[in-house]
Image (cartoon, rainbow, N blue to C red):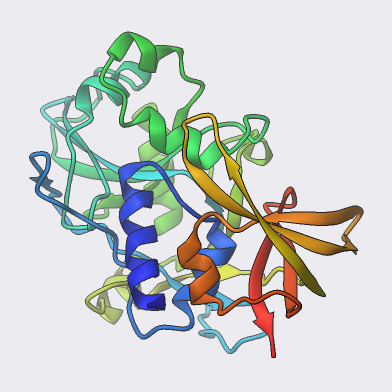
Length: 309
């Protein structure tokens, strides 16, 4: 049941309509033996990435982590990952991450917010994140949803930007200078963006700086061995689940809301928390009167992450 819910959440996320928070997804994923590898279907034509877009292994603060001599640390932005293929001085194709091997063609959309010509004729795949400002409610959903728009004119009105975090194959000796090279092409990068705090982040990326050492370590079927995402577990507060109410959203969808014994979570008094859908109630094995751990996902939205036995 939990595995089915995680796969469903992965499917909806890569469609641009997430059904749960990152914190909830990470928690449920940790209860399964499946990998976070993305999603693909056959409803729309998919195109292959020039190089696979691997996910990153998650390491939580306090856990053992690789002891590399020289590593580059950058923010892990929370948006929608894409690849940009450039060659002959122009953009050739822009794809959503999809399942990491193939993605949807969004060239006509995202190219409107990117440089049109480049001072190189070589072929590169540049990877990065499409993000929206933190001031926009549900910024990650907003960014992912923008990439699903049919209208180019409407997309142009969306407050999103592309922030590059990688290039294949590396044109320089270090990751740091790779990012400088990407910036010289006219892209914002995780190294050069001056207002990075304006965009949602969900941890740090730690990567071996020396590219030869990075590629020598190789890859698993899911992630590189020379990089990982360092994440901080949200510390929750335990309270009692008193009741569950069902509410109708603007789209007409019906979703459950947990009624809680009021409790202070950080600096806010919390008495209600979204449960998103019936599947989460079943996956967490919730029942009235049970003890639950509550966090504020993204420091804002009250979220039950587990039943306290």
